[in-house]
Length: 268
Image 1 (cartoon, one colour):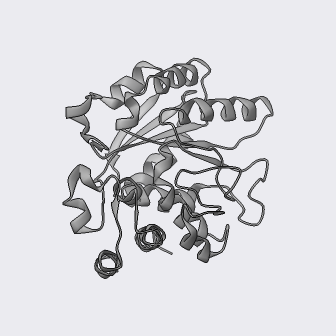
Image 2 (image 1 turned 30 degrees about the horizontal axis):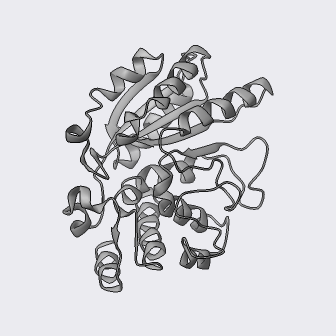
């Protein structure tokens, strides 16, 4: 399956998932569909039949409210039945609003409070390094999330411990729940900040599948003993014109039956 086709499927199923309760974190789910498509097509060493495989690659979705995109990806890869997507955030669900490792097969770290994912990833990577494992820990964080100070404590630790199997993606969609990131609290030059903490960094179009694939390959093949950060220039609500046009209001919004039908017509 091509990256483009898989990314489109992720967007379609994520929206169906959110439609099951009538609303959800649309913008940030759609903006990470492309990086998820590339990761789970070409890079994640995982086994849907054995989600806790000890030497698996792990994904920490630090921006855990974008869970519908990850749930769609995992369902499409066979980690659990597709009809689970109809239970998002409902009583007794295994798919809560924010990802939870104790409930969902394929989820490697629980998220909720923003800013904690990189620190958790450092712990995972350090433990795996101590065991001599050669797997990777991928982190997806958001630009607004980088306003949280714990991110930089995690970055300092990753750089100091030379955790070269940590690869961070920043979903730089330039928006957050309260507005445009530059108006709420500018995060300035993200790549330069991570470099200052010892990361090797690059900035790419976060919707260009080949660019994403090449950046991941570069990070894995680079002989620098250091963590890597790939800053993704993205569009919040990517793929559905009327959600893109909502601007920051698409952070959490409705997915009515009418909106779903209109979105699916665009996502072909």
